Image (cartoon, rainbow, N blue to C red; front, side, top):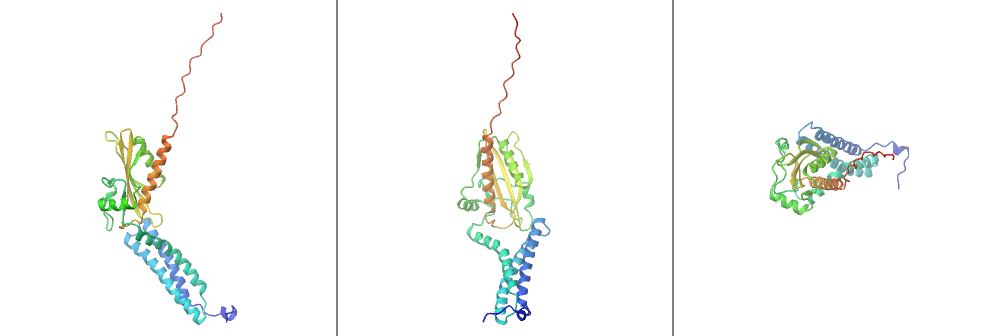
Amino acid sequence: MARRFSAPYLSEPVSSLATWTRNLAVFSVVAVLVSIIIVRFGFLEMKPAIATFFGALACAGLSILVGFAAFAAIWQNGTRGMGRILFAFLIDALVLAYPAYLGVQYRKLPPLHDITTDPIDPPRYEALARLRTGDGTNTAVYAGLYSAELQRKAYPDIEPVDLELPVERAYAIALQLVNRRKWLVIDARAPQPPLRTGHIEAVARTPIMGFREDVAIRFTPDGEDSRVDIRSSSRYFDSDLGSNAARVSKLIDDINTAADADNLKPIKKAPPPKLPATKTVKK
């Protein structure tokens, strides 16, 4: 027989398991936000921040388990609290959805954290190398031919950018795109004679957690044209879950688009010189 929502029902106690389910879910959200703040503002080292994040995920998983136990208790003894369980499950789903997606990506993608358009002679980290000496950071030295082979199979479209533009103009376009992305520029050297080789080093951040990923861009003259090589690598972790490849591919597309637009700009012709006015002579 179905239960009626009468006054006696409303006076029944709320399941303590349902309350714990909700509290654990709320705590997991708070812990996730705290871990993001720790990483973005550098309040603590990376390891405590990651431990806080995984602790939040564990709380969300525990909330789900306690929620099922609370549901069984409510079904048996008729206590209240179903609304708290459903609210907690919604929070848990929001907390766990993106990490679950990243877990799938981790299994699908190769273990790469260093992506470049030139695996033979990748752009070097010079100023950024000093920021990669802490505990747990990846080395500034390129991973080598094994990494290059994995990259070739996973991201075959990542290749050097050849532009029909002078190297000075290619540098100006790329620097403008870097500033538009609000990457932190650590070093920027415009092409100068006699070598006319330019170099940009910058720090990008991942969208949610704000993990630092380093970018180096090299500009090499090729006669009247130029070549641009890009390198992007994670400062932490052995796998970047595709973030560096996506960054390099998007920058390549934007550089090509900007270069095409630059080539299509009309050349402003100087106005013809004005001829001096001639006076008519009356006969």
